[in-house]
Image 1 (tube, rainbow, N blue to C red):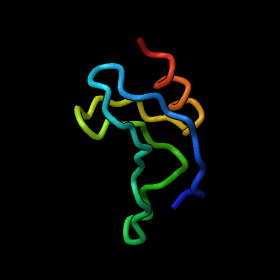
Image 2: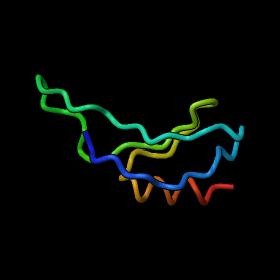
Image 3: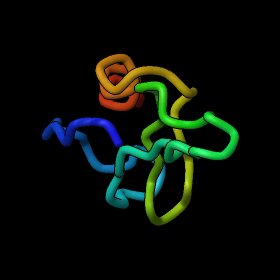
Image 4: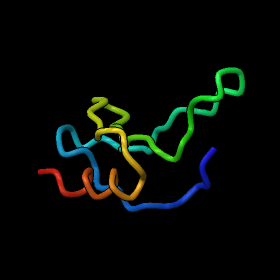
Length: 65
C-alpha cells in the first residue's frame, strides 16, 4: 500500500461530489497491483482521471472545468 499523503482535491466538476485517490492493492499470488499509480474518482458519479501517479492525477483533477 502506498504511503498515505494528504492532497487538496477540489469537488467533482460534474456533480460536486467528493473525490478520492484509488489504486489497485498488491496481489501476492500474481505479484501485480500497486506500483504507485492509480486514479482519482468521484465517489458520487464515478468520473475519474486516467491512471497515473498521485501528483499528476491531482493536477489533472483540479484543473478540469
